Image (cartoon, rainbow, N blue to C red):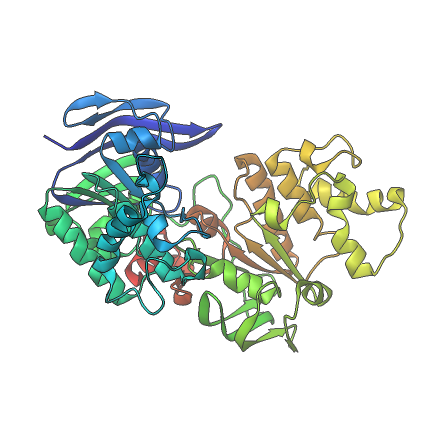
Length: 501
C-alpha cells in the first residue's frame, strides 16, 4: 500500500489551470522525484499536500484512508513536512529559532523553552557541521548568512518536523557540491528509516543520483512514472516533451528567417556579474534572440545588467558599433536601449496614476521634456497603444482600472513612442492572457521586421520556439548551448537545459 496517493487532484487560479490532473502515489522508504518544465504544476501539487493551497477537486489518501488537508497545521498533523522553494525564514531570528519555528518548545508558563530549543536545533545543525561554512552556528542571525547557508537552515527546518513524509521543492539550488553530497547522505538515511521523500529537482544528475522513481508532470497532468533503474535522461526528456518536438504550433506564425548578413546592433563580450559569468552574444538588426533554459539561471540578471539596473563585474558591451557602459537605466535609455519586465508591480506600472502618465515617462526622458500639453501627448501615444490593441476607457483613468494584460501593454507602449534600437524583454508575458500574448508577439515580429534588435527571455518554451531566430540556453549563469535553424525544437531545448544542469 502506498504511503500517500493522489487521485485526480486539480487546482485553478481564475482562468489559469495550474494542476489539471494529479494522479500520484508515494511509497514509504523511497525518494520519489517530480520533474517537469516551468509552470507544469509540480510546486502546486506539493503546496496542496503541504496545506498551503486548497485543491478544487480530487482526493488524497494517506495509508489508504481519504483525508482532507485544510491547512499547514493539518498537513503536519497528517505527518507531512515541506521545504519551500521560496525560503520562508525569519531573517531577524537565529538559526536555532528558525529550525524550531514550526513547533517552538515552550515551558509550562507559556515562554519559549530556550534549553529545549537549543538541544533540538543542535541535533540538526550537527548534521551539516562539516559543510555549513564559517560563521554558521545556532545563535547566528539568519539575515547575516550567505544564500547557501540560509538554504541549509530551511532544510534543517524541514528535517526538524520529523515528519514521515517530507517534500523538498528544489532544495539544492543554492548549495555547493559538498553540501549536496551531505544532504543526499541524510536523505538515504531517512529512506532507510522508512520515510517518504518527495524531491523536486531540475538537475538530471541529482535525479539519477538520489531517486528511486521519477514522475513527469506536463501541462498540469501526470504523464508517467518510471523506476530510475529502468530509464535514462533521454527517456525522461522525451516523456517531458510528449512527442511535441515541432518547431512551432500550427496556428502560430513561424520565427522570422535569418536572411543574409546583418549588422550587429548589440554585442556582449564575456559579461560577468551577480548571477551570471562569461556571457557573450551578438544581436543583429531585425533579429529576435531568445534566452532559454530553466527559470533563474541568469537570463534576467544579464538583461538587467545590460540595461544598467545591476552592476557589472567585468566584460564589455558594444551598442551600434560603439562601446557602451551601462551605468544606469537612464543612460541606457538615452543610448537606445529599452527594457520590459514581466514583473509589472516592481518594474512597470506607476500604481494609482493615470494611464497617460504611465505611458509617457520614457518619451519625457528621451525628448528632455519638462512641460507638455496633455492633448499633444495623447496624440503621440495613441499609435503605440493602438498597435497593441490596448483596451482602456480614457487616458485620464488610473492604470489600476485595467486588466493585467492591458497594464502590460501600457508598459510596452511607452517604449514605442520613440523607437529604441534594442528591446530587452524579460519574461514580458508573465500573468497575461492568451489574447494579449498574441498581440504582443505579433508586434514583436513586426518590430523585428522593421529592423529593431530584440532579446527575448521567456519562461514558456513555446514562446521562444515560435518567435526566436536563435535560442541561447542558460544554466548556472552561463550559456551552455545555442539552438539555430532546425535545431530549435522542444526536445533540444529541454535536453540542453536539463543535461547541462
